[in-house]
Length: 448
Image (cartoon, rainbow, N blue to C red; front, side, top):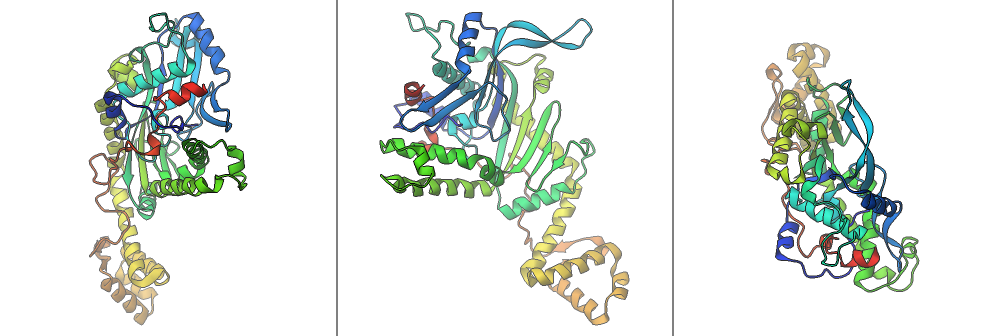
């Protein structure tokens, strides 16, 4: 469950916080390890996380959820919060062993969904600042005690002292669904010499390259949002409109479609927002680099603290990993994309039915040669097909492809790099309902 849509009118926010919230895409999932905590705080937190959810009693709606388990995937917007008493250390033999240790906290979540409730649009930067707000939020949710002066007493350690064990940096690009499909058709034909066939898992809408240092994922946001996000966002939006109007309707009544009260008044608004997000997601290609603990240890010589990680460092790794992948597959991707351009041009001129036959004819001309193909077609059919290719501006000579105008859906200059003109940079506006951030703690404090 995402934090952000907590209902109510947002209280006044400091200018510093407003600067943070008007930020741009980048940070998504993070995994943080706290310094050692004392046993009393460990017991307090453990007892809290056995069943830690914020529920609005008037509607039964869950405002947030904290789980002791692991996150299911990139779509999971819960917070994984664990009080740990064991750690992996190097033993006498050189092997890592799981041994008892003083308690510490291990937390994992999507900062983008914590602050904005979705990761279709909006951008999150300033890694140390965001982590500080997030840790402060956890302290507020757990109601960690303070002394008589208002200072933390056994509260969560300062965010700057937490170690970073994972951080994802993502960039989103604006492309049509047809262009995104063409991109994946191209990359699925590539051979990456430094990545084993088992590691490169291709799908219709995504590619996934896991590694010990980094993991690279490029995927179409639309199908993922439709499959995993819509039910959660729909519940959150319906709750938002209920609270804005001061209603106390049961959420289950709305989902069962029961009429009564003003249910019908806000149902169209919810569906309108859902459809708008889906349209946006359908036109978004997401390139995400997951930076693992091994990479962080290698670069810093130790697990870096939150205060040591900069956005520039994260952007540099993202650019390097994406560029390395594209460089390995560049030639084959260009070849396949050229095939797609030929098919798209034939479709646009002759229609799909005639284009299929002409495309098969063109493939034989490029791979077998004009003289061979001429012997296998009737004289009139051969010359008609050849003339239609010429009229379409398509050449097969010397196995090269020349297209007069690029009619393919995927722009020829596109690459999922931050320097590309199709990079999405729009922030979440101050007035967006997706900017009802839980760090404005009023509603959460009342419901916790």
